[in-house]
Length: 477
Ligand SMILES: Nc1ncnc2c1ncn2[C@@H]1O[C@H](COP(=O)(O)OP(=O)(O)OP(=O)(O)O)[C@@H](O)[C@H]1O
Ligand SMILES: [Mg+2]
Image (cartoon, rainbow, N blue to C red):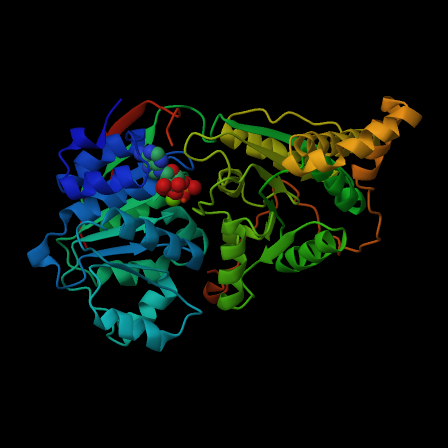
């Protein structure tokens, strides 16, 4: 068990970590922080929700000293806007007792506002590639004095076709800079980028064969495309998740699905890249606060997003990209918590499921299609909870006299059964229509769209064994 105290960090950073509720380091933090402090370039791979942000955030804020802090010293690049906001916030928390400020810059937000904020010279900038490029062209971001660059979700930025932007950004920073890359998935393709831009990077990754977090209970349901929505509603009625994320394949799917869920009385909000940033921000805010129970999302929400208390992940549509499965389900089971992930597949998508199983080296068990009988049971359990919590309510005393009178004329079983019936919500059957999505058939090459403008908070039980290995050929460009 390693404490932050054992890593030779300053008191202000240690105070920040304890303020954030961190008691001990996670494995990726324990292994990478000392290396980064020494100046080593790192490719860090660790499961979702295991604290990779602080693994690069802590040494980043630690290395910025007061006299150096007049210029931008640290840059973090993220694939999505929501992630830029979240990472900037975590870095601000980590740097709170050192007076370190990090600024998120991302598309969809007023550039003038960002320019103003940039004039105040934040020591750390967290941005999405497109907007960073924009500021570089306007010379509103200067990277000459940069000391550390981190590519969070590095592989996703390659998937999204941001490679040229990333290369341009890295090429405009001093060669003396330290370069870090982090993700839960590191395909071999990342090596080319590493060879070009990193100095003998050390690869730090979990030895455990699990790509996915063991505390996430995974399963799948086979269903015909036209029955998906009704089967999904039954599943939700049975599981009654507190906070869940429902992933859909396309923006249209997300729009139709969130509308359909609201029609059936669920509290759902959609997020995808064609929505205004103001709307995206408010949807995420409401979901974080718990005002909305379900976030219906495209893969724009699959990477890095850390929302406390997400109990269930539903893949309404199976992901096209196998790594996307790892990241999507990783939105639950974070920081040592448990979670559940259910994927719906149509019969023709069995091959894609098998492919995912091969990638994650784990069998995903099949769940029987939920029945109406189970739905009733689920709703009854909810009704019983409601009734029992009401029994202990002080205002219930006011009703006791009436209850005694009722019991002289009726038998207690009939009365309680009647109360339960009233509390058991009826299954809604309002007809809804969803446009069918084509199945994901294994072997069909799929490319993600590269429309850059579209894309955009304990204790750990999750101890993996870590291995280090030297990688890259140390070529500089
Ligand atoms: N040492 C720690 N102790 C307890 N909680 C921690 C610790 N480090 C990080 N956390 C918390 O764990 C959660 C997950 O961390 P983080 O978002 O950095 O995970 P990640 O590894 O980047 O996951 P992903 O692959 O999904 O991006 C966050 O809420 C973070 O504040
Ligand atoms: Mg992360």
